[in-house]
Length: 239
Image 1: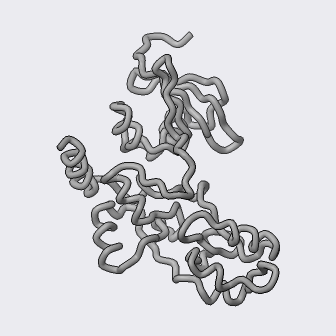
Image 2: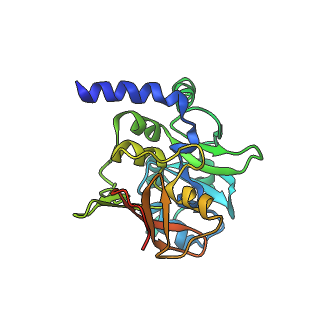
């Protein structure tokens, strides 16, 4: 079938793609700082959404490990108060992945090492993001959503044929899902591609042409491009 053929092609493609292209970027990681107030720690753990949560001290680069959601009930004392010492003792050790590792190699390593999550690090040992087994599987079979996931809003199309995306959407996903031809060598996300072209953080409302497609910055913060509109209709001029 067509879906089966697509899955096979995606699997073969994993050797060409590095873990950096599928990881959750550092800025988007939701973790637990053990230096936070006890109230904040309790709140985050009681309301934990994902199976595993990174636990660190002050900075993600000082990662202590991962807490598994299934261990949280056993850590609760009276009045839903978490025992911090027991929390630390329950952490699984951090597992690190070099940023240039291919997704296929990491899939094999995850299976061999019986691991499901790891931290992608650069040549200096700084954490760049987190990669899970599910992230790799999604590269093969498509988006996997569990009962805690809200509907994906990273890609939306309007009735004029424009595509509205979050800045952290990977270029590889954009190219695959919308049949675009953005270069994948210069940056991993659409925001990164625009910033590389502009050599700065663009202002809201600025326009850029990449591969003859018009990209408009629709939202940004002081340090990041957060939302982009892509006009699929090829244009010759910018008004």
